Image 1: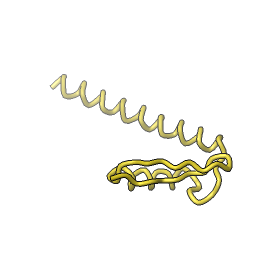
Image 2: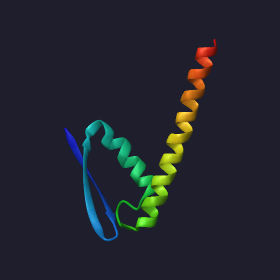
Image 3: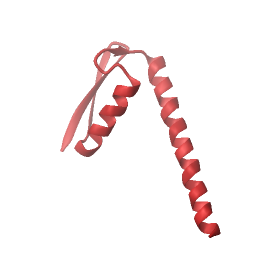
Amino acid sequence: MATKLSLTLNAKRYDIDVEDDFAKFLSTQMAEDFNVSGNNDLKLLLQAYVRKNFALYEQEKQVFGLIEKIKSN
């Protein structure tokens, strides 16, 4: 089943259909990064994108570090 989430960027509303399991997580993340009940400018979107990619970068470093640690044991 799909859930529809909405976000307004530069006064244009975008509806996003996501799986129910992912919807709760994404909704929480969007609420942290955006004004989900109002308008958001593109600069805010870019800042959120960079923050999320930095978090992904850090997670990837940790995963590769753990893999190396497991290989060395």
